Length: 224
Ligand code: GTB
Image 1 (cartoon, protein in one colour):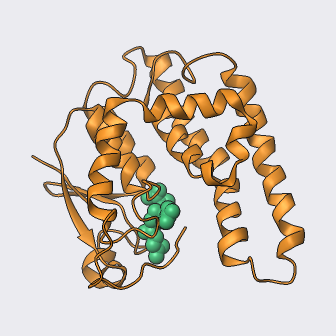
Image 2: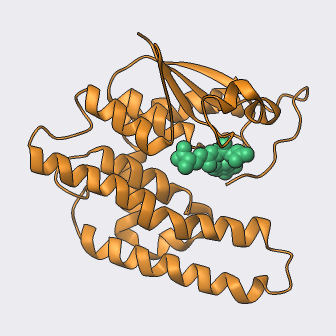
């Protein structure tokens, strides 16, 4: 059964691929699975039909038959478990790849989201200029640790896995800040992820929806 995912009707990033449907598209592309996309407006995301699928009123969601999922970690894990290409066969290597998925979402992504909040949601507060360097240093601390782990390797633990897919997706959010460039091996790691044909297909698919602003749609709001 072909799954259906949801994505922004109009992404606030104008097609940079930073909204979280991109990582789900990427996982489906790596797995060679076709999928359909239902575009949702900001208004529809907060209405009962969508809230029944995603209690927090967010995208993406994933529907496959009578299964409905939300949270990109759970969705990518579901795809990776059911199709070859995203998790190693060896049980221990598989467990480690899953660990990296959690590390991306629980350890690396939170300070990056703090930066988005500090810049775009709190940037006009009187204390914003004092808070920003603290947030940036928390990111640098994590990137330094990650950079030392990756060292000269191509991927986090052997072959490319769902752990890398999630980590690259999380790090991409930092590119505009310039902080990623301070860690050449992490910049190269992200570039390796972006160079994968499956990532390119995922990116192009979201770009096709978001590149041309549709004047009949309301202006998107900035969201996390
Ligand atoms: N933990 C959830 C998951 O991983 O699935 C988080 C889902 C989430 O934050 N979804 C966002 C959303 O629906 C879209 S991706 N927000 C609407 C809301 O909360 O009302 C976050 C995002 C949005 C915009 C950009 N951008 O413009 O650059 C990047 C990322």
